[in-house]
Amino acid sequence: MKASIDTAAEYLIELKGVFKARSRQAIGPLDLKLPAGYVVALVGQNGSGKSTLMNLMTQLIQPDAGELRWFGESYPEGLPPEVRQRIGYVPENFSVEENRMTVEQAAEFRSYWYPDWDQARFEALLDRFKVPRGTKLSKMSKGERRKFEIAAALAPHPRLLLLDEPSSGFDPFAWKIMLEELRACLEEDGTTILLATHIVDEIKRLADYIVLIHRGRILGRAEKDSLMESWKEIWFEGSAEDAADLPGVAEHSEEGSGLQRVVTMEAAAAGQLIAQSGLRLLRTRNLELDDILSYWIAGRVPSGIEHSGEGEGYQ
Ligand SMILES: Nc1ncnc2c1ncn2[C@@H]1O[C@H](COP(=O)(O)OP(=O)(O)OP(=O)(O)O)[C@@H](O)[C@H]1O
Image (tube, rainbow, N blue to C red; front, side, top):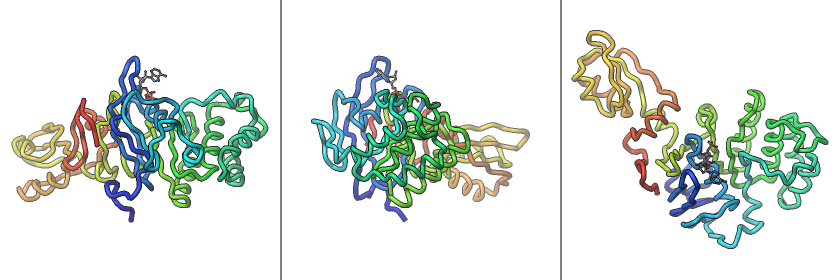
């Protein structure tokens, strides 16, 4: 069993008070630690700052204020090659620099920068993804290009993988292969992954933790399984007063005489109180992760989940 995120021996990336001014939305101040050995899903609405955060983490852009550390060190003069070589990045938008290169030429170019480049792994990934060989990157479909980028990011066995909406444009077959390959990375290399995604199923299947970013601020961090366990929709026989007494109620409706429906973020405690009060529990249902995230954005979070509230920082 893995150690808790809070007692992690090593943080691959740390941000302290990182701030970046943007024309429409300031990003930060951001405080975040990325511990070794976990998959952290970075979740937030369009324009909330996910790509900006990843670009800061790869020094494609520089912060206006605050400090970033990689593997325990800060590099204000630029990330040295030996640090870059440990980080794989699949950005949302690909650089045009390699557009004129074929798959093979781009791979040769990248292998020069990555001493641990594993050509056999790269070829195997191209085969699995059915990436067309001999094709210029500019002539590929969006999905094909993304498959190439994923194969190239995984080929050097990175310690840290930053994935910005990696499955965008994938068909269901490619998506399944990507999940399998990422799982193999976790198992074989112990890779740490930061995954920006809007795909709930991706979070459910891969993530250990969820970091929620909203309007440029980090709202909080939650262990995915405990977050999902905390929320339930419950139907029971009782009065509206009984429903009001339950802990963590975010929504309540009376669905007929004496039939109460509540959505609670303290499901275990609510279930216990219903039993202790001698009320009849009729049915419980798990909430969908996207509903839970909507409640979180609105400030409804179970006790024990770190939440900074709008406009505040997060440590
Ligand atoms: N190159 C840029 N120059 C100025 N502002 C930018 C730039 N890129 C993004 N922004 C702004 O920064 C904010 C955060 O954008 P960002 O791309 O980081 O969001 P995101 O969470 O990745 O969104 P999405 O889910 O749509 O990909 C937005 O208000 C956006 O308009």
